[in-house]
Length: 99
Image (tube, rainbow, N blue to C red):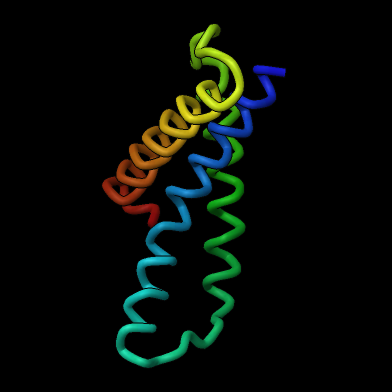
């Protein structure tokens, strides 16, 4: 059961890190009183984020130490690990010029 919580925590952390810039853009548009018109670039970006998040989760999941605790502690620790690892992945992709 703990393995499922850890995997879900890593995956949710990765996805949260991928969606933060989009949410920031929505907040900026709302403060300006403008609405967001949907562009298919957002759909492609979401698909890539899901893929990168899943791959990062599968990679990082193996490196998460066992015995993080039970329940919410394991989920929170793995969420932070997933968020941080995806942040590093995103920065490396920007550095290389993929994004």
